Structures are given as structure tokens and as C-alpha cells.
Image (cartoon, rainbow, N blue to C red; front, side, top):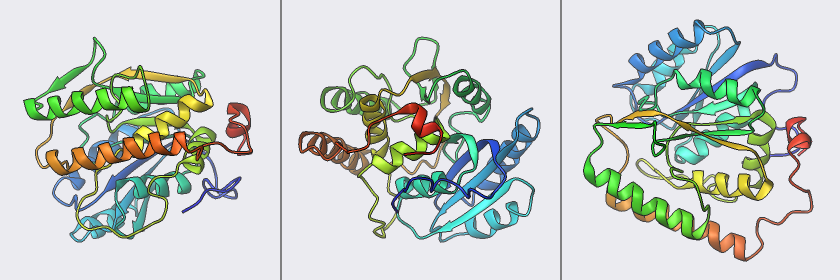
Amino acid sequence: MAFGPSQCGDPAAERVDVSLIIPAYNEARRLPATLHEVVAFLSAQPFSWELIIADDGSEDATVSLAAQAATQPGVRHLRLPHRGKAAAVRAGVRAARGRSIIFTDADLSTPVAYVADAHRLLDDGWEMVIGTREAPSARRIGEPYYRHLMGRVFNWAVRVLAVPGLRDTQCGFKGFRAGVACDLFRRARLYRDGQPVRGPLVTGFDVELLYLARRCGYRLYELPVTWSHVAGSKVRPGLDSLLMLRDVLAVRRNALRGAYRESSPCDPAAAESGHV
């Protein structure tokens, strides 16, 4: 699914302040509570919004629950083939109509209240905001020791091979100015072929976005968050660690081969206006 010069959102559609994307794969057990909390929070905000449920080919009641939720004002359901979280987020960004585009996980391990913080930071001039669980004021609640160890080893590899200096690249909460999101996903090379997958696919696509953001010079803010471990995570510690490491190596390989060099320069002002 490629991005062209103005392929984020429908140019004829009314714009909103915030697009919140929630990728979902077989989330029927927790989706009702998540959607109730998210819609209640967004409805109380002073900014206009849309909620995009990027349904990644779910095989359970996620489909009917998302479709029912989409009967509410501001809620949209994207019924997608099962191609993994990266493809679902990409589809959500492509459909988004917000000036700020934010994605977060369906388990709300990062509370939805941080959407307001991210939107404010993006409005204040930052071009990308990422949740971090490693800042001094951040908190991790209930995280198993092996998950934390796995994350720290992975982050070491990320800092050595692709994105030095960032303490947490894999928190599932990230936000962008709209033009910047379009530009980064247009430049990204991983998971754009749209191949079907089996089972949950948790990947390191975030690392490529962060590498490209650094390469383009986009202003990035690390937002300390309180993150809670939620039972039923789709992360498979052994296999997913290998898949994410493979993605980091692919970013490194692409960079060395010049795959991220383009004739069009990285220009935040041009990206913000949609000319990417």
C-alpha cells in the first residue's frame, strides 16, 4: 500500500483535530471496554476527533463489535485483510483526516489520556511524539521481569544498529503531525507489500519510522508515560524478539544500501502541507 503526494485521508472530507488509530486483531474480549473508555474520553475533549478501528482481519467478534461502534459519530471501522499490526497502522494513517495522527494499542496499556498530551505537543511544534517507559518520571506497572529484560536487550540493539539515543522505541503509543506521518509511511520499506500472515504479527516497524524521522530531522518528543502490563498480550517473547531483531537488521541493511535515499528531500514544512 504505497503513499502518494496527497493520499492521507480523503481531501474532500472534513478535517478533524485528532485521528486516533487503534489496530485490533481478535480483540473481542477487551474491545467493548476499550471503546467505551476511549469514546468517553474523546467526547469530553475540546478538540474534534475521529476514532479509527483498524481491524486486522480479525476472526472473532471484533468485526461485529467494531462495526457496531462505527454507528456512533466519529467512530470508523476499517475492515482489513490480516497482514499484521504494521499494515493495519499504515491503513489507518492512510485513512486518517486529523491534523494530529496518533496510534495506540487496543489493550490501553498506555492510558488514552495521553492523547491530549500528544496533541498539545504536536500543536506546540513537535512533529512526532513517542511514549517512553524509560524516562525518570515514567512508570511500568505489573511488567514481568522477562518482558523488561527482553525490551532492554532489544533497545540496546536498536541504539547500536539504527536509532542511537532513544530509550524506548517499542512503546505502542506514537503520534505525528499529519503530513509527517504521511511522509514517514511513504518512505518506509518494511511491511508495505501487503502479504497475508498467520496469527498475531508483532514487529519492529516502529524502528524504521524512528530511523526515518531522525534522518529527516523531524522534531521528536519523548513523552513519559505510565504503562501497565495487560494480560492477554499478543507479544510472544521468543519468536517476536527474533522478528523484531530481523526488522532492525533490515533497516540497517536498507540504510547501508541507500534504500532510503530519495530525490525528494525531507522537508517538514512541505510534509505538513501534504506535498511529499
